[in-house]
Image 1 (tube, rainbow, N blue to C red):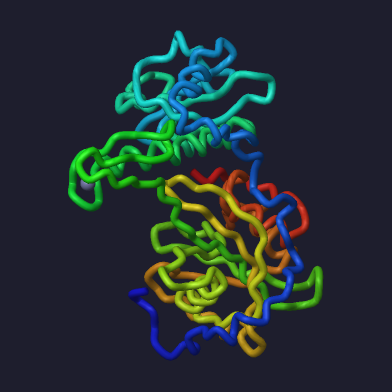
Image 2 (cartoon, rainbow, N blue to C red; image 1 turned 90 degrees about the vertical axis):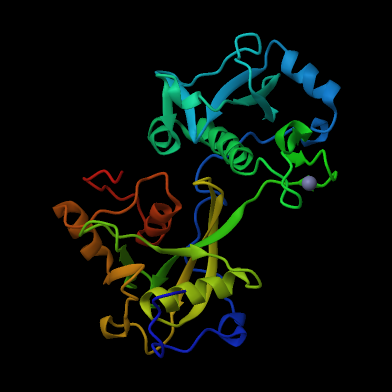
Length: 330
Ligand SMILES: [Zn+2]
């Protein structure tokens, strides 16, 4: 990645990351929040008659999304009946536990409605279950909005399979939604349980005092563990000796899947002097012990990411309890 200072540490090799150990800290669930509908009704997607019947079920509900936005009211997501739903592209999201189905209708003008909220805004207002459904809907809607044409010939494609694929009418090719894997990692110093320290970094675009975990995209041809080691080396100049999976979170801004890890800095690279930020992506990085983190949060000199984020969950997983950050990160 550009901006890397050569020679800070050796590039990670397969040998560096092959000896994986289970992490001491694992997120409580495999997901950072409640998640989407458990039953996505995938078996009926390609059956237009069955999808039409699901739409016509009087118990089915419809949410309206578009351009990264969704309609909310005081009770949460605006859920319409099929008859109330506006025209637009239909996306089948799944079965409701109590009967009927949930659809999204994607409209380019969804953002013009006075009830429209951005996904980030909705995330602060919705419970985990509704947020999971909305992440699912927005992830698919984002893909349709940004991939309207065939990658082979440029012809406008059409949505098929209830919104889970697009087909080119010219050459018959089918195209599928993208999910871009990204790693998010909390680097630890390998100290004794309860006394180990965590490294938090500040991105160049953030104001002083705002810190979080490190993150970056997985590159083609790379394992996730190699991506963790590479990103940590690039951004803060540290080799890591252990990489442990902690959980995941869909992050449709516009199409990411965040894969969360704890990593332990290699022996000899665990003090302040070992940290060498790249100066481009990360401009400041500091080791925090638990008491120092709590004090900095209480004083307002430190702001960490909001509760919905997997970054926050990583930090709290290490800390051992929920954190109370006085300043809201928007
Ligand atoms: Zn084509």
